[in-house]
Length: 417
Image (cartoon, rainbow, N blue to C red; front, top):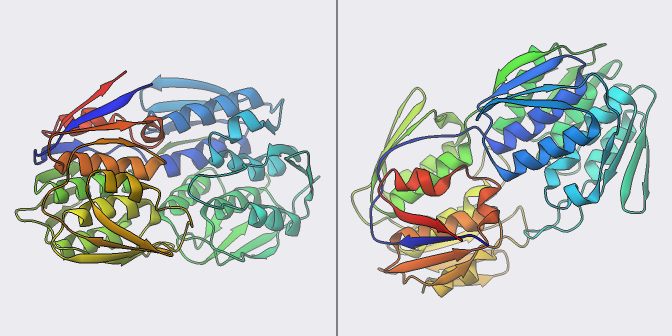
């Protein structure tokens, strides 16, 4: 099993190029199921979740070809096996995103229920409810969702809760439904806008993406497209937070500042100096950070995927901060690991109280989920002596070559087996 070894105490200094967004690339890969034409996606990150999704699509009949490390061509003339088996779904919950495209394109889908998730409940009932409103017949049998529809019909769908994958699934399904579909209480994340932009370039008629009401006018067929995946806003936020925590200076290229306003405003509050220039973000931090309190909520509020990273920042900041998690009920598992580095954190319900201290101590810690892994990396970068992070396969699900990128800007970090 691989681990990361980090020698703390070195400010980050230099330039990093941001990779494509995992959470945008995954639904875009699934969109290939909606057309018989080939689609080409560029700026696709090399991550374990991408590998898993490609394997899932391949066993359904999608022909994939990697043209270079970040460009993939997908062709789906025939869907021979509209099934997502448990073995794949259990390792990557985003596999549920094949449900809508399969029902819309081939009229059936056989998708394993995702099962448990380390950070909390992620029910798929909104996906099912929306497809049923569009005329699909759905049954849950032996741990699988069995969906059938001769032809989906447009419908008005009111989401009970805001769900990103639910919005994406229903939006994709509605592109080939007959008539008009209106999704109310839709998620507003930038990745949904990216998916809508790609689908529109494929011939879909989608308006309102990025707002809480999305309207889709169904079309008979979609065609191929060449499309570039948006930059990863969570990777961007993670590196900005790491530079702030280590009192460094960093220039991020191929970044999109407007997708993470809530994060940059909190970094400014912590004392960072930030300049934005088209697709670049320049951050300078020349003093110990001030503590920043925050509350996670659906976009455009502070993202839950950045909560753990700010926990690490607050651990060494000046003052006391409150972090309230409203999205996932188990997303404080990194607290116990940060406390192994001597962080002063107490949890009361869904709120963590972090009292900043001058110096963390290196220790052996264990990653519990993807974003928790990133918080431990940031903490290790400022901790005294050496920190060893175990179970970094979590990290490889969402960060492309993170140790290489951090090494390029002065971090003392290496991967060992």
